[in-house]
Length: 267
Image (tube, rainbow, N blue to C red):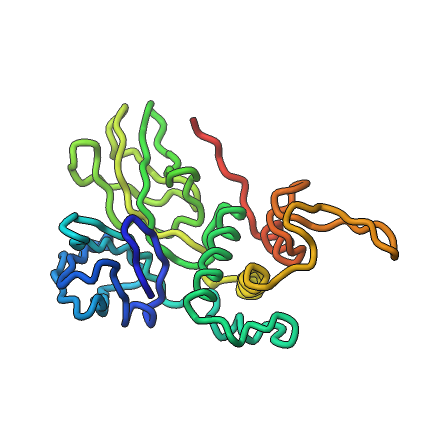
């Protein structure tokens, strides 16, 4: 698994055993959102084995790239939704992926995972995430903002610090809200929360495998076509992003529709 500067990658425990860093540094600093002490590790030939403390975890890796300090983020999970071999075994006589390298297939898996989770507004396995919550008035519960989305399926609060950097005691109120009664009014806090479904629905693996394989195969229809007329009649294609379809595969769209959540719009 190769890590590029300013990237965010999800890795299983097994994949963390051999990780390469661009720029071939001689050392790297590994920091943990779970609260473990940062460590300095040696890098040989641009590769290292990430020292893990717990799973799930959120790891920040910092290293020198041509004299410039860069970093990457790794979401550590116990296992991924699927493996490279799962994609290779998916309709092998039709997809013909035998000659494709593992890195290309893994990139398609990463893309499929991201699309399915983003369209569903939830994560289907436990992960650690950094977010922000606040208490603008006397209410005692609040959402957690994770960039573009709000947190769902929250399981626990790993850490929380208010705007002055002081630890604050926040608790999970329900799957979407934190109990912020110990946070002062008109204050905000940076939090690390564990989110995700457990166990992972079995349909999610099939959805990731199908979408990753679809990204890797050639398609007869042009990319800019939503329909076509043939000798057999008129055909209309399912195209991701058109007419409300999340992806171009109906089975994957069905999984997103079945398990997807509506995201709270906070501005």
